[in-house]
Length: 219
Length: 81
Image 1 (cartoon, one colour):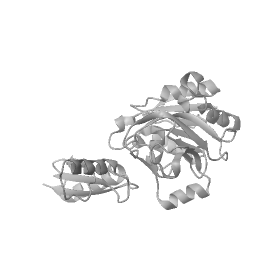
Image 2 (image 1 turned 45 degrees about the vertical axis):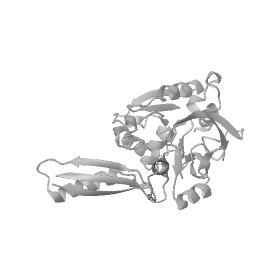
Image 3 (image 1 turned 90 degrees about the vertical axis):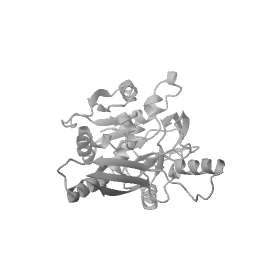
Image 4 (image 1 turned 135 degrees about the vertical axis):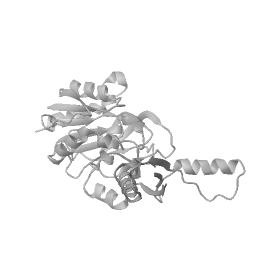
């Protein structure tokens, strides 16, 4: 299974993502955001964390118009696996590939710490093989406060689209949402960083559960 | 021709900057303020040959497509010669 790690000006978790995916057994290639060719030769797309375009205007607001996003939208329609972490999640919501918005943390602080996540459902390719009830991994963001209107929140609950919840809400996110999937369940967006929890030297290996679940269940 | 564009959070969207600034103004004894909302102000200068009607279209499209997030923000603008 071959992953594309998308690189924007200002991405800073691209190498972490490359390492974590490679480590699990994926083939991985970096793809520059100005790439206009199709991504159909990849089986998965990873949009990493960082500060694409310096977070100018709003997080993800300019990155969503990068040429590569056109191919990502095309692939998403075909049901391709797409993971957006942190700034990647912000880009996915700005691009309407995932519902809701990510706004300033409740306390306006940039939060950089280890958090405990509840695995809310195993009904997804990203969580299917996770036997643990909780995973630990870091967050590092200022705009991670997930909000959506009440209809969207109800839909997320009804369709079992909330994959990860904060055990202790750090940023004010509605329903303690840390990570969600789309209706088709091929896209994962999450604020915590599984790629930064992929080696015991980094303080946790729990992020690997997500990538292992993916590699085991990918058909 | 210039557009002065104002972007602010929709009612009910958490605006911690506004809340904190309001509290801070109270703390220095400035009274009479009910609430403060902090948003963005953007100045858009148009090409010389752009008519007012076209400027309006450009400002509108820019706000809709990029400058404001329709889920969380509202926008308004004033066109000036």
